[in-house]
Each structure stands twice: as C-alpha cells, then as structure tokens.
Length: 449
Image: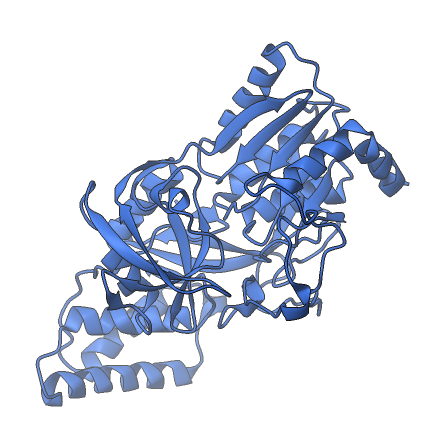
C-alpha cells in the first residue's frame, strides 16, 4: 500500500538487483510492456519509445566499448536516480534496504546519526537534527553543511553516496567536517547509535505547558495526547500551551492531520491536490478538541518543514493558535511511497501532490510566515545575506503555482537584548510572555474578527 509522507526519510546507495540488458530491442520491449499496462489516459507519446530505445542503445555501447567493465546494476540504477532527481529534490528511488529503513524510521526506531539532510548543488546540507541524537548533541544545526567524512571530501557526491559513507555498525565512530555561515569549518566526531525517536516531550514552565514535537512518525499523535494528559494530571492549572515545532523536519501526513485534530473542533486541516483537477483530497478534523479555549502559541523556524508546516498553517488559518518565531522552510509537497512488487524491488518515493492550508494557501517555496516574528539570536543585520536555507533554494524545487515568493532577508522586529544570557531560549520566553499577559487570546479574537 502506498503511504503518504511529507518529508523524505533515510537514504542509501545500495542497488536493486536487475537483469542483464541484452540488446536495445529487448530493453525497449521490457519498457513498452510496462508502459502498456498503464491506464489509457497515461499512455505516453510515440517519442517516449524512441527515447527508451536511445537509452538501451547507449547502455549497450557503454557495456561493450567503455575503457573498463561496467556494473550493469549500478549503471541502470544511476539512470533511474538521475531521472527522479531531475523532477524535484524529494523524488527518489528506495532500494529494498532503504525501504525497510524508512519503515523502521516512521515507526520511530532506527540506527544512525539522527540527522535529516538534503542535497544542495553538490553539497550536503542539514535540514534538521533530531532531538537527543548524536547530531543534536554535537551541536549540528539546520543550515550547516557537511563537507567531509573521516577526512575525505563528499563535495560533489550524490546524496545517496554521501549518506552511505555515514552509515556503519552501531557503536562505531566517524568524523564529519561541518561548515557554517560565518565560521571556520570544524570536525565533529559522532558515534553511530540506535535512534529512538521519541517525537514528543512535555513539561510545565510554571503555569504554561510546553510540548515539543521533534518529528511526525507513527507514534506522534498518540504521544501528544499522552503528554497533554500528563500536563493535566500534574495538577497545575495551565494558562496556555506552547507547541514547539522548531527544527521539526516533518514526516507522515496522517500524523500531521491527527496532531492538528487534537486542537481543532472539526473543519478542514489541509487539502492536497495532484496533477489532475479531480485529484483533491481534503482532510478534516473531528468534532471536539482536547484543550478547548486554551490559548496556544506555535513556535516555528527555518527548520520547520512539511508536516510541521501543515500543523502550523492549519492552526494559524483556523485562528486557533498564534504562530511565533521565524518563517518556516516552505516544503509544500507530498511524497507517496509506492512499493515495487510489494517492496521486494524497493519503492518509489514520488512527489504526487501539493498541500494547501485551510485558507487555500500554497506554501511551496514560501513557508509559513509567523503572526509574531521573533528571532532566536542577535544578528549583525548590516552583514546579513541570503543563506540559502529554504525549500526555494534547493535545485529543482517546485515553484509556487500561485506566484507567491518568499519574503526577502530582513531583520525581525523582536530579537534578544544585547545582555541576553547565552543558552537561554528567547523565543520560548516571548511565547510564554504572550500567553501570560493575555496577548494571545486578544490577538486571536482580533484575527477572528
């Protein structure tokens, strides 16, 4: 069964086993047979068959005349990967091993470094580290670039090749070179470990509940409800709730809907639209919410992507929460994981739809703009320049079909004072201030009109 995800999972560079290509005609026959089994409205033009014959001809020439032996499996898999990567940054092929890894990750348990990365013009860029993992404990941050592994450059490698070098037995170590804007590259030694992605952590800060969502896996919505029950059972009367989605790279669409559902009394959460006019899917919340009339602040930043943006956009459009922080990543597309031969041949992760907030906004390449913009750190804005840290900066990213563009680099009106203690969370402090002084409820009433 196909599964909808809003953000890519683990990647790898192993290869699917395929048969030998004997001749151009034989290869074309295989391709044509597969294409012919499609629905009539998906039939390709004649030129496609000519291009398939060209591909088979090139492969045979390479096999027979290249200076050294060629691995057929790797050559064909590279062609498949190249085709998919030309579509957008999030479409890819999953080998059988990768497919199993992805299923483990979405269940909330896998091995690795605990980091989500994407390709960026030959570089490997960090989207977000997961909480309490080797990457996060080492201080790796969204927007960092990984340039070498164990002293060997990974610049110019495909993302799969780079990720494959990061893999290894649990308990073993590797050293990654981390480059950050405005700082000298540094080496960081990480130990591979079993990643248990506890996606929800909660606590009380006086009379304010704080719930941190670090990912959207199969356990997230259930863990969220348990966290809310725990806050209630603590005995303190909460004045408000902070839902912290900062540096949350996303995950399962269904979980984003269920999380939003917890705070909404019915109505639309998100809609997805495919390539055809009739491919519209609207996801609605059920009647009843777990914290009625509770003022809520949703914290986001540039590392909040996909499923995190669905939740923030839904609660913002429905006037259920005040969104605070800085603009989100801007990933407004949905990937469908399509198993091939039941997963025996791996799976295809294909961008099949765009998603829209309840107000009909497409945030692809634009992101969710906070209602109240608050910076986490002080920055010398006279020297600030575009850092290329959003979806719209990725090579081949889908355009926003509504014509919207991301807001340019600017200085948020609210930032920490000069004497703000290092290590203290200014954005969280401001969120709690807004909740305690009644500003959240007042602003939400004004928005609702």
